Image (cartoon, rainbow, N blue to C red; front, side, top):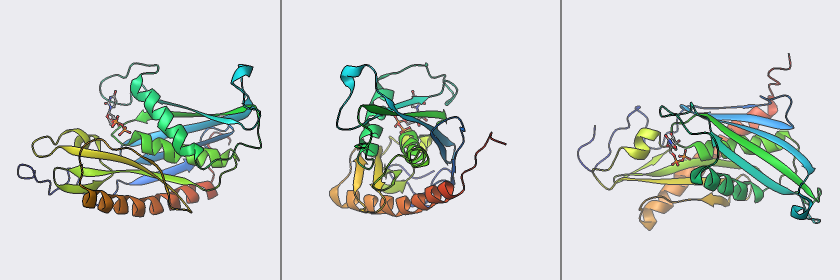
Length: 241
Ligand code: UDP
């Protein structure tokens, strides 16, 4: 491992700007309106879309547009310590930020008084679950035929001690506190306008480092977009056979 305060070698042998092995599938839940999965390393996310359906209770309806509702949750067996089922502060925050990121690219004006539900579940978690969930959800929305101005692709970037890194795993996300600690930046990019649809920052980073790490993230998002588009072209229909 690295000398104190300097992170020179990644635990799993990756280069600093190298993501984990990634894969995606669309159509994994045939009974849903749209569904997809996205995996990076040991982190796996499943997203299912239901709707648009009439929103109840009626007083929550918007006569001008449909609304998006995201529900993110980690499965009890997704990490070594059992996760308590049901919502908590973290899952509610992730559901909300995912809702904001996806709302920036979908157009539900053609579906007044309705709701589109996106259910994101994490069967395996090794950090980066919110960005994996957003990648899966974007594909599931496209699969459901929800009008989208463009796609979104997401990645975690950050800094471990003094080194900029991409796609941190749980070990990197938590183990490095002998130097400057680790900084975690989930980033969501839009596919065409190349705008940032969501950015969160947990930790410290200088402005030049921040700019460099965002560039690293943008490049990775371009590759993730290809993985998403390939999966959308090859819908599996798993379970339909
Ligand atoms: N984690 C955990 N138990 C929890 C919440 C999170 O073990 O109750 C782990 C899990 O591997 C998760 C990682 O911590 O992926 C990082 O969580 P964070 O809140 O930073 O969100 P994420 O990186 O998954 O989007």
